[in-house]
Length: 270
Image 1 (cartoon, rainbow, N blue to C red):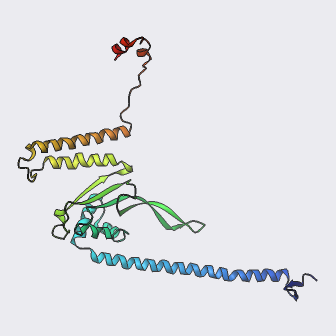
Image 2 (image 1 turned 60 degrees about the horizontal axis):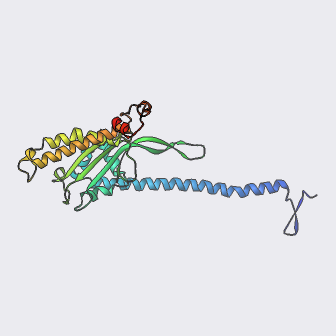
Image 3 (image 1 turned 90 degrees about the horizontal axis):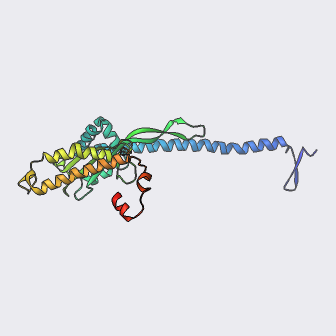
Protein backbone atom coordinates (compact mmCIF):
# COMPACT_ATOMS: atom_id res chain seq x y z
CA UNK A 1 0.00 0.00 0.00
CA UNK A 2 1.01 3.66 -0.21
CA UNK A 3 1.44 3.75 3.55
CA UNK A 4 4.16 1.08 3.28
CA UNK A 5 6.11 2.78 0.55
CA UNK A 6 7.32 6.35 0.21
CA UNK A 7 9.17 7.62 -2.85
CA UNK A 8 12.57 9.09 -1.90
CA UNK A 9 14.99 10.07 -4.59
CA UNK A 10 13.11 7.99 -7.13
CA UNK A 11 13.27 4.75 -5.08
CA UNK A 12 10.49 3.04 -3.23
CA UNK A 13 11.63 2.03 0.25
CA UNK A 14 9.51 -0.10 2.57
CA UNK A 15 8.93 0.72 6.20
CA UNK A 16 8.86 4.45 5.70
CA UNK A 17 5.44 4.97 7.25
CA UNK A 18 4.07 8.20 8.72
CA UNK A 19 4.98 6.87 12.15
CA UNK A 20 8.52 6.27 10.93
CA UNK A 21 8.66 9.83 9.66
CA UNK A 22 7.49 11.09 13.02
CA UNK A 23 10.13 9.02 14.78
CA UNK A 24 12.78 10.26 12.39
CA UNK A 25 11.65 13.83 13.01
CA UNK A 26 11.76 13.38 16.76
CA UNK A 27 15.25 11.95 16.68
CA UNK A 28 16.34 14.92 14.59
CA UNK A 29 15.09 17.18 17.33
CA UNK A 30 17.11 15.46 20.02
CA UNK A 31 20.51 16.80 18.97
CA UNK A 32 19.06 20.30 19.07
CA UNK A 33 17.63 19.60 22.49
CA UNK A 34 20.92 18.14 23.61
CA UNK A 35 22.74 21.12 22.14
CA UNK A 36 20.40 23.38 24.06
CA UNK A 37 21.31 21.65 27.29
CA UNK A 38 24.99 22.01 26.50
CA UNK A 39 24.57 25.71 25.87
CA UNK A 40 22.92 26.09 29.28
CA UNK A 41 25.81 24.23 30.90
CA UNK A 42 28.32 26.39 29.05
CA UNK A 43 26.56 29.58 30.04
CA UNK A 44 26.57 28.39 33.65
CA UNK A 45 30.27 27.67 33.42
CA UNK A 46 30.81 31.08 31.83
CA UNK A 47 28.96 32.74 34.69
CA UNK A 48 31.08 30.87 37.18
CA UNK A 49 34.22 31.97 35.35
CA UNK A 50 33.07 35.59 35.34
CA UNK A 51 32.27 35.38 39.04
CA UNK A 52 35.73 33.93 39.65
CA UNK A 53 37.40 36.73 37.69
CA UNK A 54 35.31 39.32 39.53
CA UNK A 55 36.41 37.86 42.85
CA UNK A 56 40.06 38.00 41.81
CA UNK A 57 39.64 41.63 40.68
CA UNK A 58 38.01 42.58 43.98
CA UNK A 59 40.84 41.02 45.98
CA UNK A 60 43.44 42.83 43.86
CA UNK A 61 41.65 46.12 44.48
CA UNK A 62 41.32 45.35 48.18
CA UNK A 63 45.10 44.96 48.31
CA UNK A 64 45.43 48.51 46.88
CA UNK A 65 43.51 50.09 49.73
CA UNK A 66 45.89 52.22 51.80
CA UNK A 67 45.41 55.13 54.19
CA UNK A 68 44.22 57.40 51.37
CA UNK A 69 41.41 55.01 50.46
CA UNK A 70 40.60 54.47 54.11
CA UNK A 71 40.20 58.22 54.57
CA UNK A 72 37.67 58.39 51.71
CA UNK A 73 35.87 55.30 52.99
CA UNK A 74 35.63 56.78 56.48
CA UNK A 75 34.21 60.08 55.21
CA UNK A 76 31.69 58.30 52.98
CA UNK A 77 30.56 56.03 55.81
CA UNK A 78 30.00 59.03 58.10
CA UNK A 79 28.30 61.16 55.46
CA UNK A 80 25.95 58.56 54.03
CA UNK A 81 25.26 56.43 57.09
CA UNK A 82 26.81 53.12 56.01
CA UNK A 83 29.45 51.00 57.70
CA UNK A 84 33.01 51.26 56.45
CA UNK A 85 32.87 47.62 55.37
CA UNK A 86 29.79 48.29 53.22
CA UNK A 87 31.50 51.27 51.59
CA UNK A 88 34.67 49.28 50.92
CA UNK A 89 32.73 46.42 49.29
CA UNK A 90 30.84 48.87 47.07
CA UNK A 91 34.03 50.63 45.97
CA UNK A 92 36.09 47.54 45.08
CA UNK A 93 33.16 46.16 43.05
CA UNK A 94 32.66 49.40 41.10
CA UNK A 95 33.46 49.55 37.37
CA UNK A 96 34.89 53.05 37.82
CA UNK A 97 37.29 52.08 40.61
CA UNK A 98 40.26 53.45 38.61
CA UNK A 99 38.86 57.01 38.94
CA UNK A 100 39.98 57.04 42.57
CA UNK A 101 43.61 56.54 41.59
CA UNK A 102 43.22 59.23 38.93
CA UNK A 103 41.93 61.54 41.65
CA UNK A 104 45.00 60.85 43.80
CA UNK A 105 47.46 61.39 40.93
CA UNK A 106 49.29 64.73 40.46
CA UNK A 107 47.38 67.02 38.07
CA UNK A 108 44.64 64.38 38.07
CA UNK A 109 40.89 64.63 38.52
CA UNK A 110 39.75 67.58 40.61
CA UNK A 111 36.53 65.93 41.78
CA UNK A 112 35.34 62.47 42.76
CA UNK A 113 31.58 61.88 42.93
CA UNK A 114 29.56 59.14 44.61
CA UNK A 115 25.80 58.66 44.31
CA UNK A 116 23.85 56.68 46.91
CA UNK A 117 20.35 56.05 45.62
CA UNK A 118 17.83 53.52 44.34
CA UNK A 119 18.92 51.74 41.15
CA UNK A 120 17.43 48.88 39.18
CA UNK A 121 19.13 45.61 40.12
CA UNK A 122 18.54 42.36 38.23
CA UNK A 123 17.50 39.52 40.49
CA UNK A 124 18.24 35.97 39.33
CA UNK A 125 16.20 34.68 42.25
CA UNK A 126 13.01 35.94 40.61
CA UNK A 127 13.03 34.29 37.21
CA UNK A 128 10.12 34.83 34.86
CA UNK A 129 8.57 31.99 32.87
CA UNK A 130 10.47 33.12 29.77
CA UNK A 131 13.80 32.81 31.58
CA UNK A 132 14.35 36.57 31.97
CA UNK A 133 15.06 38.20 35.31
CA UNK A 134 13.06 40.70 37.31
CA UNK A 135 14.50 44.12 38.15
CA UNK A 136 14.17 45.53 41.65
CA UNK A 137 14.92 48.97 43.08
CA UNK A 138 17.74 48.70 45.61
CA UNK A 139 19.97 51.24 47.34
CA UNK A 140 23.43 51.31 45.83
CA UNK A 141 26.59 53.34 46.36
CA UNK A 142 28.54 53.90 43.15
CA UNK A 143 31.19 56.12 41.60
CA UNK A 144 30.03 58.46 38.84
CA UNK A 145 31.27 61.25 36.60
CA UNK A 146 27.99 63.03 37.25
CA UNK A 147 27.09 63.35 33.56
CA UNK A 148 25.34 60.06 32.77
CA UNK A 149 23.14 59.26 35.79
CA UNK A 150 20.38 61.42 37.24
CA UNK A 151 20.77 62.23 40.92
CA UNK A 152 17.72 61.05 42.87
CA UNK A 153 19.30 60.37 46.27
CA UNK A 154 22.46 61.48 48.03
CA UNK A 155 25.53 62.92 46.29
CA UNK A 156 28.83 62.68 48.18
CA UNK A 157 31.79 64.50 46.68
CA UNK A 158 35.52 64.94 47.19
CA UNK A 159 37.27 68.04 45.86
CA UNK A 160 40.97 68.65 45.36
CA UNK A 161 42.12 72.26 45.46
CA UNK A 162 45.69 71.80 44.19
CA UNK A 163 47.66 69.84 41.61
CA UNK A 164 49.64 67.97 44.27
CA UNK A 165 49.73 64.21 44.48
CA UNK A 166 47.50 62.95 47.28
CA UNK A 167 49.44 60.93 49.84
CA UNK A 168 48.60 59.27 53.12
CA UNK A 169 50.16 62.20 54.99
CA UNK A 170 48.37 65.05 53.16
CA UNK A 171 45.01 63.54 52.18
CA UNK A 172 43.17 65.26 55.03
CA UNK A 173 44.62 68.66 54.01
CA UNK A 174 44.36 68.35 50.21
CA UNK A 175 40.93 66.73 49.93
CA UNK A 176 37.63 68.35 50.90
CA UNK A 177 34.44 66.36 51.45
CA UNK A 178 30.78 67.26 51.29
CA UNK A 179 27.30 65.80 50.87
CA UNK A 180 24.20 66.94 48.97
CA UNK A 181 20.91 65.42 50.03
CA UNK A 182 19.01 65.44 46.73
CA UNK A 183 16.27 62.98 47.72
CA UNK A 184 13.60 62.66 45.01
CA UNK A 185 15.77 64.78 42.72
CA UNK A 186 15.49 67.96 44.84
CA UNK A 187 18.88 69.31 43.77
CA UNK A 188 18.12 72.96 44.50
CA UNK A 189 16.99 72.14 48.01
CA UNK A 190 20.12 70.04 48.61
CA UNK A 191 22.40 72.81 47.35
CA UNK A 192 20.54 75.48 49.30
CA UNK A 193 20.79 73.49 52.53
CA UNK A 194 24.51 72.76 51.97
CA UNK A 195 25.36 76.42 51.35
CA UNK A 196 23.14 77.96 54.04
CA UNK A 197 23.77 75.42 56.81
CA UNK A 198 27.38 74.41 56.12
CA UNK A 199 29.36 76.71 53.81
CA UNK A 200 28.06 80.14 54.81
CA UNK A 201 28.46 79.58 58.59
CA UNK A 202 31.95 78.16 57.95
CA UNK A 203 32.94 81.16 55.83
CA UNK A 204 31.59 83.67 58.36
CA UNK A 205 33.57 82.03 61.14
CA UNK A 206 36.74 81.87 59.03
CA UNK A 207 39.60 83.77 60.68
CA UNK A 208 42.42 83.21 58.20
CA UNK A 209 41.78 84.72 54.75
CA UNK A 210 45.30 84.33 53.43
CA UNK A 211 46.80 87.56 52.10
CA UNK A 212 43.82 89.58 53.34
CA UNK A 213 45.03 90.61 56.78
CA UNK A 214 41.85 92.39 57.89
CA UNK A 215 39.82 89.21 57.53
CA UNK A 216 36.08 89.70 57.88
CA UNK A 217 36.55 93.46 58.25
CA UNK A 218 37.84 93.72 54.69
CA UNK A 219 35.34 95.26 52.27
CA UNK A 220 36.05 92.66 49.57
CA UNK A 221 35.43 89.81 52.00
CA UNK A 222 32.20 91.44 53.13
CA UNK A 223 31.14 91.88 49.51
CA UNK A 224 31.91 88.24 48.79
CA UNK A 225 29.85 87.03 51.76
CA UNK A 226 27.00 89.31 50.73
CA UNK A 227 27.06 87.76 47.23
CA UNK A 228 26.95 84.26 48.69
CA UNK A 229 23.98 85.18 50.91
CA UNK A 230 22.22 86.70 47.91
CA UNK A 231 22.86 83.56 45.85
CA UNK A 232 21.40 81.37 48.60
CA UNK A 233 18.33 83.60 48.65
CA UNK A 234 17.97 83.23 44.88
CA UNK A 235 18.18 79.45 45.23
CA UNK A 236 15.47 79.53 47.87
CA UNK A 237 13.18 81.66 45.69
CA UNK A 238 13.76 79.42 42.66
CA UNK A 239 13.00 76.31 44.68
CA UNK A 240 9.79 77.77 46.07
CA UNK A 241 8.68 78.85 42.60
CA UNK A 242 9.27 75.33 41.26
CA UNK A 243 7.35 73.85 44.17
CA UNK A 244 4.42 76.23 43.51
CA UNK A 245 4.75 77.77 46.95
CA UNK A 246 4.42 81.26 45.52
CA UNK A 247 0.98 81.74 43.96
CA UNK A 248 -0.15 84.94 42.33
CA UNK A 249 -3.64 86.06 43.35
CA UNK A 250 -6.07 86.24 40.46
CA UNK A 251 -7.45 89.74 39.93
CA UNK A 252 -10.52 90.72 37.88
CA UNK A 253 -9.14 93.59 35.81
CA UNK A 254 -12.35 94.31 33.89
CA UNK A 255 -13.48 96.80 36.52
CA UNK A 256 -10.22 98.68 36.07
CA UNK A 257 -10.12 98.87 32.29
CA UNK A 258 -13.81 99.19 31.40
CA UNK A 259 -13.83 102.95 32.03
CA UNK A 260 -10.60 103.74 30.19
CA UNK A 261 -11.51 106.08 27.33
CA UNK A 262 -8.46 108.18 26.46
CA UNK A 263 -4.69 108.37 27.12
CA UNK A 264 -5.16 110.49 30.23
CA UNK A 265 -7.28 107.71 31.75
CA UNK A 266 -4.46 105.27 31.12
CA UNK A 267 -1.99 107.59 32.81
CA UNK A 268 -4.29 107.98 35.81
CA UNK A 269 -4.79 104.22 36.04
CA UNK A 270 -1.03 103.70 35.84
